[in-house]
Image 1: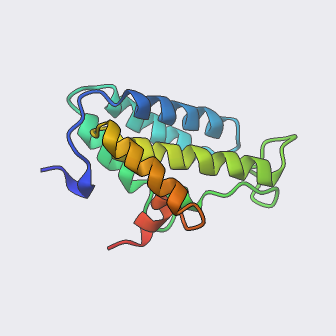
Image 2: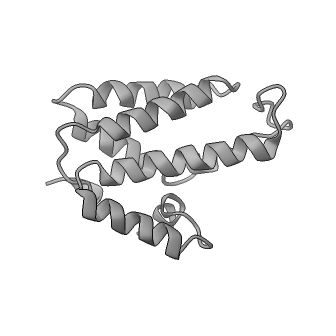
Length: 138
């Protein structure tokens, strides 16, 4: 049985692409921990024997203290890429995190679930994104 409501997935192509984009983004910053962790998860996703383990590990990255949800780029933190504003970098980070979370949750789903996800993203656009809500769910 698969935990966290993640279904069985044979080839998480969209998830791999989203994760690779997030890792590239994080490597442009002074962040060391997350690119290393996410590279390890990407390796798990590339092996058919460990895809599900990788998806579970990735899902765990979005909950609790010190999670990806807590990452914030500021001059004070010393992790802001030179020449970029805090707002610009954190907005891009939010988009990438939302995409990775969505692709992990939908990797084993069909077009109907993707359509529903988009509908709910629009309907609840003024609320916290699902990756944040997940962190508070029991």
